Amino acid sequence: MNENSPIQEKDLATREAQKRVDKIKKFYKSLTSWAGTSFFLIALDLFMSHGITWSKFPVFFWGIAVAMQFFDILRLQRMDKNWEDRMLKKQLDRQALPNSNPSETEDYSDDLLRRGDQPEKEKADLSSFRKLKKPWKDEDLV
Picture 1 (tube, rainbow, N blue to C red):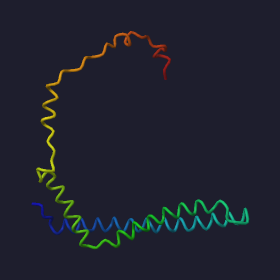
Picture 2 (picture 1 turned 120 degrees about the vertical axis):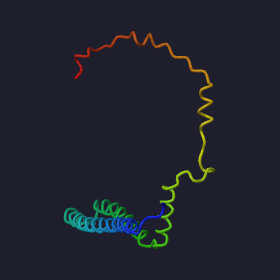
Picture 3 (picture 1 turned 135 degrees about the vertical axis):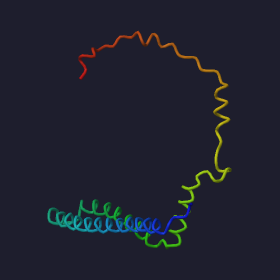
Picture 4 (picture 1 turned 180 degrees about the horizontal axis):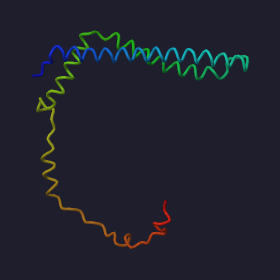
C-alpha cells in the first residue's frame, strides 16, 4: 500500500523537476535584473559625481542576494538522483507511518490524568473592576 504507482512516481518527479527549473529561471531573472540595474546605478553615479560613491552599496548587497541564489542552484544541481530517491523514500515513509516506532512517541496521558487530581485555583475577586465606569460614551466611538 505504501508503494507508489509508476504514474504517481513520474508525476512526483515531474513536479520536483519543475520546481528546480522554476528556481533556475528565477535566478536568471534576478541575475539579469541585478546586472541591468547595477549598470544603470553605476553609470548614474559616475555621471553625477564623477566617481563611484553611493552606487557600490546597493550593487554589493543585491549582489550578495543573487550570489546566495546561485549557491542554492549549485546545491540543487550537485544532488545526485540517488540522494533524491533516498530522501523522497524517507519522507514518504514518515508520512505513511508517523508513529511506527513506539519509543519515539511520547505519552502524556498520565500527566493529563494527574491534572484532574489538583485542586482548582481560587478565582480572583474582580467585582471592584467591574464596577468601574468607562470615561467615554460608546456612541462617541467610531
